[in-house]
Length: 92
Image (tube, rainbow, N blue to C red):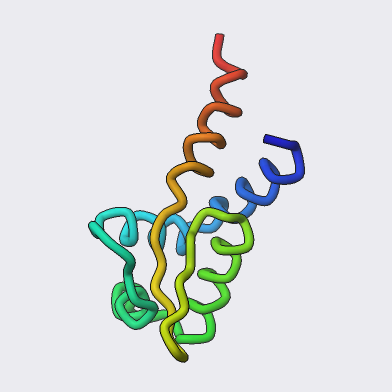
């Protein structure tokens, strides 16, 4: 993983709302519709949730699949695994 990708992922994960979105999507077995993510976020506005999702997609942490005007999201497990491997270099 190059340093720029590491930085982008770290920044994306640095927001507590984005972490909650990741946790909620991770609990699902399949792609989660944007409307479900919005419902999960309760008090956040649609535009705020969309902004957070965009940051996570831009960091390649979420995979988006468009269905007409709607989108569904799933965790990009390969990128998370690569991120963890990168961090593990600093152990010991």
